[in-house]
Length: 430
Image (cartoon, rainbow, N blue to C red; front, side, top):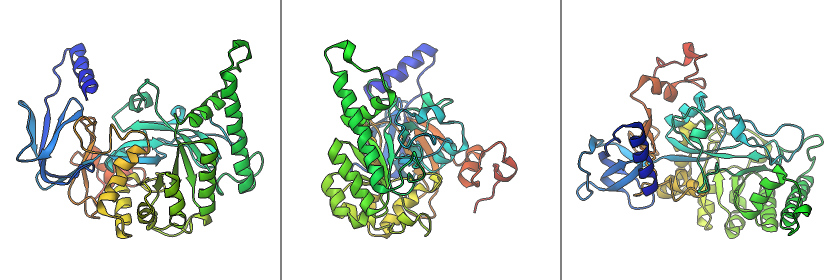
């Protein structure tokens, strides 16, 4: 908190402006996620972070604060999506099934309407990934949905200043095709092993005391080495139960930090996943169909995993699931037996932890980024609307603003200047 507040103050001084006063939202039902629900509370934002949060009758409001009465509304932490494809993102091409040097940073359009639609759904933090048509399709990027003009302005940075992200991997049917891609599941795993073994050898040679014997810089092996060290989390697309177990096997062999993604058959191997201590990011599809290997998908996977002692979150895979409907993923899991508390945590704090961001986002706690969502009602009611989305104390979506509202209620092209005649601000509410 101290560093963020100082940065805001320093910028204000540099620009010759007065920093904005604190903002106090009072009277809302507050779901902190990390603590007990507050039936009628106060959330105070100052310098882009949460300064106070607590009950209405015992939480201080700083002098000079702007006070907003939001009684009857609901406040939740900003939603965190661990698996998204917004921004017209692209990854590896058809030249090889394993392309760790690819950085999706170089292919994201932050001005694409999909960013605004995600804000309209209450999303504040996303992991933007390349697709799953490769065994390894490139480096992901963790993004705050600020009103940025460039990807650098939206990117989350690690403590050393580098842009934060993971590595996208996949197995199953998507990456199986004609050479040079693998034709079988066994060949898929063999190719992955070969590349990680090469990365281990690369690391070993870099440690040679003789500089003349050290290898030239290899961007692909360098990225794999970051996975081997645990610096870069592997976000692994996998559906079928046997494919899930293959991922766990590779994780054990190479010491990878893995988050399982999709895991349609998670309920079949929940004990094995939990015993491995590997978290799962689930997709909640509300209609049948799709690929054959996902036929076992069940809304009950979240409950099965948590009952076994595992950790779960949800993701959109946008556009498979529209970012504007992300809260519904939690609702579907509640319908299948997951507790409401765990479902909301799966959309926020547990997701943040799977991106190594749990100390910064995912819950409404003093010192964390002021990322939050103002809702019209119960988070899991089909009638509830996202009224406002805030990132680091700045409002980035306001349903009352016609320019923002079009992203919430329009069709797939909502907000596009090329589709204004069908998806503009005059779209009627359904």
